[in-house]
View 1 (cartoon, rainbow, N blue to C red):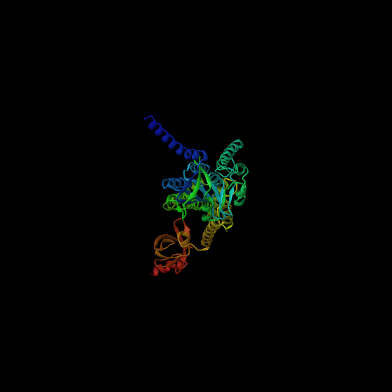
View 2: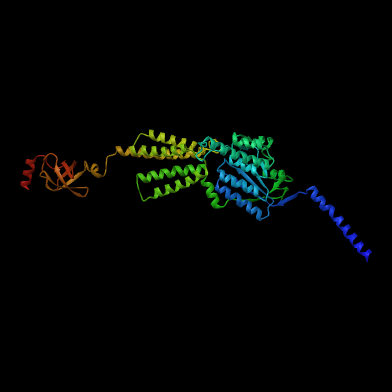
Length: 458
């Protein structure tokens, strides 16, 4: 019995010894798990704001729910709000699904807030001909912080944030920090050489090949990327997100503000059912939402309002177009300086939009001005001025006062020369004395004696 018990113990120990080496070996060697699954792609284009923030979190939530293996964000942004940028970077850091931020297509940029988002990604990729950087902060009005200590505080805070992101992703923290402190901007080739970007990829196929087998840190755990082959699943913005992103475009915000202010001014000048005023107010509110999403310059706002005011003033005074030229110049200048990217550089409205709006307004106001000037030269056809020179028929003898019919109305009239006119005579209106028409002869005689004799014979 003792022998059998000892044999059982020996067999059990042998089994434990046979199983122990693989477990010990796996722990000692630190086996890295590979991340497999579907690839999701989404486009981050335009201003970094609330709509983009909601879109990013929605894409990451869907990728996690469907057990995706990789999310690729194709980004092209001039920057945006710090609050939305921080929310997006936090979502990327907490994502259980690896994320690639790819600055694409050629000519795209990851400026200002986009530079932070690129550094927060597990893999920072760029297409040839793109750039990244210029992340020095400015206030929402487009100006630097008014207080030097406050500016230094904000700059140091953001510099530490981007530095920590670069360190976490094993990139160049010093150069990333200089993007904030000195507005450094790099091309894709420079970013790759300096260690700010991980990969250079001209298209999606080469991007997926480049990330395959790459080791990344996902929520503190190192993993190997092994995305599925095939066409990635595209995730697009919802209609609501597209609308909000559309309104926050610099071009659209400029058009909404300009058209809205113009409609309000025209409504004040000539009230007509509040249609123009209501439409203008809605446009201004939508444009104000765009201003909330964009760093704007107060000088641009003032120039836009002043330009429209000068155009309307030229129309009211019936000028010769000089004021309209100055008004159009103010509109163009206001559009050029209306927005500033948080890197300090101007975030201009596109010249095609500025040119089209200025041309349309210029033609409208110059055409209206031409009609106003031409109306001054025309003879009046209504009112008192329109009655001067018109024919009237005597309905009650003028001796020298009586009644006449003019324009279908009965008027009290007086002969301008004291001549007498009898019923049926035609006279012509010479002017007014209060509400009395002053008339002169048309077919009647101008001699009072002859008129008296003629009346006696009749």
